[in-house]
Image 1 (cartoon, rainbow, N blue to C red):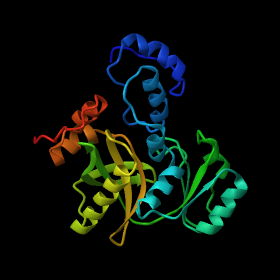
Image 2: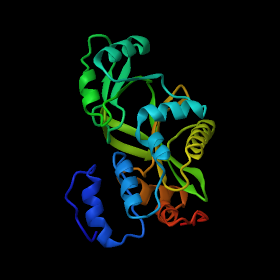
Image 3: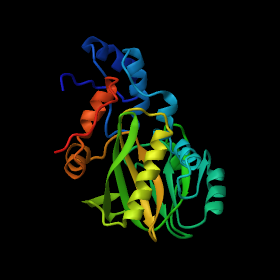
Image 4: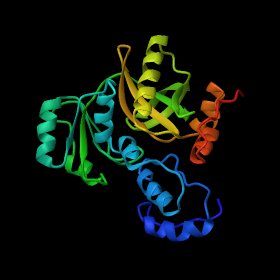
Length: 266
């Protein structure tokens, strides 16, 4: 709010030069997965509290995310990590149709490709090119309802708070999100338990989360998660309205090293 820094988000040195003079109490990022790693480096340079590299890894890189989900016993679509065109073709043969092809570490659904049947176009090299680490994910495409779970780490433990259902004009373009999603209580509890377990086992001790599921025949499949809030007013307005928890309060107190905050009712 007080200073605009015109620099590439990965140009940490430039940010360090300009941010140090502001003497920040803490540094944070929201709505941007790519910024997690640069902000960690920036926090180190300014001696402010932030997440450790191994924590960031399981919220930014979809390859690490898939491995961590399996480690936690969370059901996910079958997936392969690829670094070349030939590896991509091999992974597609193993996964089968339909599948999703996407960069492992980009933001806001950039580069995602939905391939439903043989003959449909896809570009493995483009998915790899759009990845910062030059890797792509070939993932089983699970048909079903698209649900999102938002939560916050409160008192050092994660609490899933809301579940919404997304509707699309076309793939990748959301037309609306309904809160609270009309799902059986068992499904809601299963999703909440999966997110809580994933985050608690990640080592993150403060922050907001936004997790996506596909619900197929009342079976939720964990697709991906983020160590940030949801967009379009989700964290600032929707989650407090639905849950009574003002999640940005928890984000700020977490950055200050205060993990005893309890949700306050609206």
